[in-house]
Image 1 (cartoon, one colour):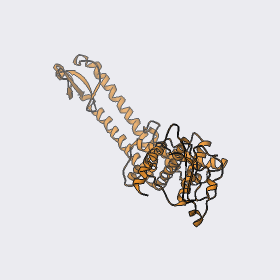
Image 2 (image 1 turned 90 degrees about the vertical axis):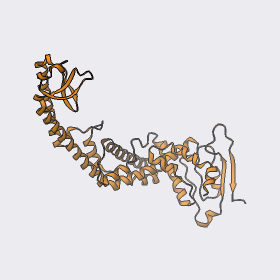
Image 3 (image 1 turned 90 degrees about the horizontal axis):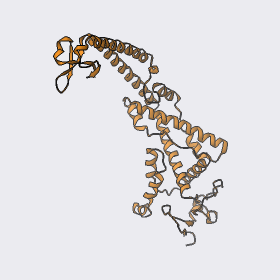
Length: 355
C-alpha cells in the first residue's frame, strides 16, 4: 500500500496509540512497525489473536508482561564469550520468570475456560529453562548482590576477608590509643583504598608510616602506619581473590545463558507476539472495537465496525473460501475513525459489493 495513503489515513498515529498499550520495548517496536496485509489468512490470524486477547483480558484482568525485558542483545553477548553485569542477569531472570508464569496462566485459562486456541498455541511454544532460572536465583539476592552461598570458594574467601579486616582494624585501634599526642584526632580514615590516621605534621617522626595525603594547610598528614602495612596487604590480597571468584561465577553463569540462547530467543519472540495481541485487545476495549467479518457475505457482518462492543463470546462468522471471498467488498456499519474523540457521528460505508 502507498505510504502516502497510510499517512493520510493516519495509520502511524493509530499505531502509536496501539504501541502505548504494549508492556516492553520489543512489543512497542512490533506494534509501531505493523503494516496492513492483503493476505486473508494473515488478517484472520491477527483478528483471532486480538479477539482472544479481549476474552483473556476479560477473564484475567490482572494478566500482563510485568518484568519482561528485551534480553536478546545480552544473550547474544554471552554467545560471543562476554560476561554480564548483575542487573543484566536479573533482567534475564525476571523475563524467564514472567514468561513461565504467563505461559502457565494462558494454558490454564484455555484448559478451564476455552476460547483461546491461538494464544494457547503461542504460549505453548515458550520453553521454560528451570536450571538457568534456578542458577541465576541462587547467584544473586533480591538486591542484585552475590551472597556467600553463590559458591563454596566465595564463602571461604569472604570469611577470610572478614578475619583479615578485623585484625587490621584491631591493630589500628591500638595505634590510636598509643599515639594520641601525635594525632590531630583519634579517627581512622581511608585514602587510595588504604587505612590511614591523621598525624600532626610536626609529629611526623613519631609515627613511622607511608604518607598517602595531606590537608590543604599542610598541618595534617594522612599516614598508613608501617605496623599495619602487611595486615592491609593481606586484606587487599583477599579482596582481589574475592573479585576473581566473583568474575569466575559471572563468566560461568554467562556460559549457561549462552547455552540456553535458542529457547531464550524463542521466548522473547513469543512474548513480543503476546504483548502485541494484548495491546490490540486493550486498544479494542478502549475504542469499543468490533471484530469485522472477513471474506463473508455482507449479511453476516451487518454490524462489523459498529461503534459499540460486540458479544465477546459470539462465534465468528464462517469465512468464504477461494474466489467466493473475492465477490464481496467492504461493508462498514456505523463506523468511526479510532482517533476521533468526544461526540462522534458514525457513518456507514460500502465499497465493491453493489457497484
